[in-house]
Image 1 (cartoon, rainbow, N blue to C red):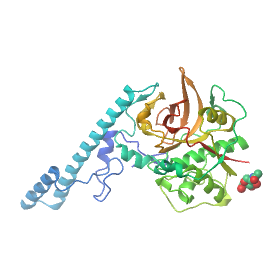
Image 2: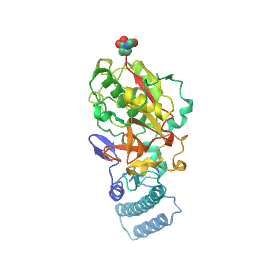
Image 3: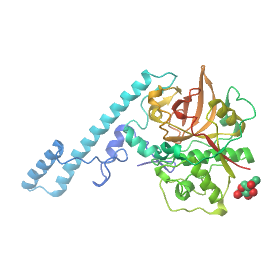
Image 4: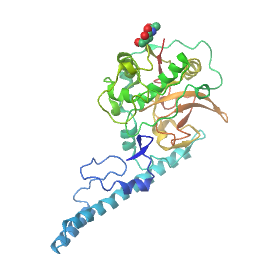
Length: 361
Ligand SMILES: *[C@@H]1O[C@H](CO)[C@@H](O)[C@H](O)[C@H]1NC(C)=O
């Protein structure tokens, strides 16, 4: 496990990650953190060889300590082989994405390159979002009063806090909502706070902490709780703890929440007038993204398989390619200083399907 400013993150390069997991006990799950041991079936030729070897040593009078070390070394090299295979497959996927890229994105080596798609999904994405069609009806937003400008970026207007890191916890929904509220609170008071995601992870009983959540639920939970504490008062740990919320420490409240229309033009117009927007999307291409405006083929980015929540902070064009500027929560070392740029104008990856905002009166 690696730590960066107190947040658990995968900061491992592929090879180092392998070596450091070896001291872990044998009862860890098969699919776990990078570097966690892979359990081998007893018919695995490597295990058979290890057992045989251990028996031979035992019969020769060697001590148990040594036998344990031998089997550890064998499981270590198996582990390394597995991660190398995953890494090579990911590099192939990145190459395929690259060869079919319609925008200007570069895909390739990222800090997630030694995770399988399932591991990535389990550790970083949000299974609840795929059930977005079951979400509660939200109040529709009042449409923007004028058309969207050509470009807009709330980072230029002081409404966006520094990029955060959710760690190995499917809490993207909490970051998306909290950062939307940071923007709404800034619009209301002129003050930019960094607000607490951990409060939602611990205290929002409508959602499932690191197991995922829905922004529509989170707004409701925040209204019920009475508001959000600051990041400093209720700091992020990246795992569920018992709720430690205290109403005396509320630093920002919300009065209600609204759902935006699903037209990208309307979303852009609303964003420019009202602040950064909580959004969700299919994050498949994000695992491999390094920089540029990402425009994967639709087959890589089914709009019905929404599995990640983010914050739309702006939009514009780069060398003629229209984009959404998307604040992610995978640390500043992800993408372009923590941001992902997605092609705008063809409802790509379902980015228009689940846009919402808190309202502060
Ligand atoms: C909004 O919510 C806050 C905190 O709950 C409350 O004090 C305030 O009166 C509400 N504003 C309106 C207009 O309802």
